[in-house]
Image 1 (cartoon, one colour):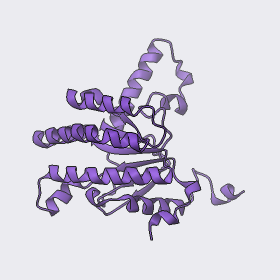
Image 2 (cartoon, rainbow, N blue to C red):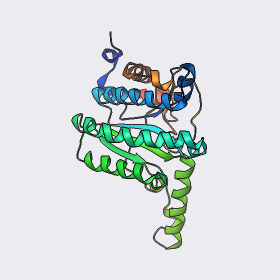
Image 3 (tube, one colour):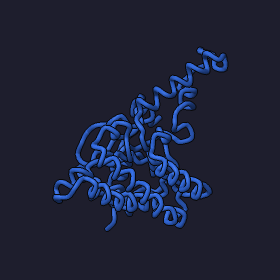
Length: 247
């Protein structure tokens, strides 16, 4: 029996974020180069995106490449960028077929020109789709995002277009890459690591966290459904008591 049958479709998280971890370790276990693990991880992305769409998730953010990942060996980074270009190019038709809209967050202009170009083409080609919003976090980190937001806020204060006393949480949200996306209700990390790794630090203040021991290339939609079942058993209090929520 599929885990899907146990999900309350009226209480599916609108936004799920995933830290896709474990590609390198998966490759090591299989005596393959790290890039082989990354290529196998693409299969997991395809299956999880399909599963998210099946149950009505509105937004799915995948942590694909962090600003810190640029420090990895040049050969691995180069191979990753080429894999990204090839994957985006190959998957665009499938995204359109499944009514999936592709968007991206991060320091996108730091990507190689070929990667940036393919990404923008895919974003444009899928822009009219009304199903799942698939958000790739590329050359992204929360500290980078917050730093850029603070710079822009400071500039607007200096230019007298934003009074200091008008700065609120809502205003700060409007300066983030995710300004048009609701905050994630559920954050999943694979591979057994229990870290956030500089991902959506502002946005996940009240997200439910779920850690899977599976390495990302082994992760499938059934694992996603399992995480959602666990999420639906939790009580989200947002600082209140259980009694307050009940009343």
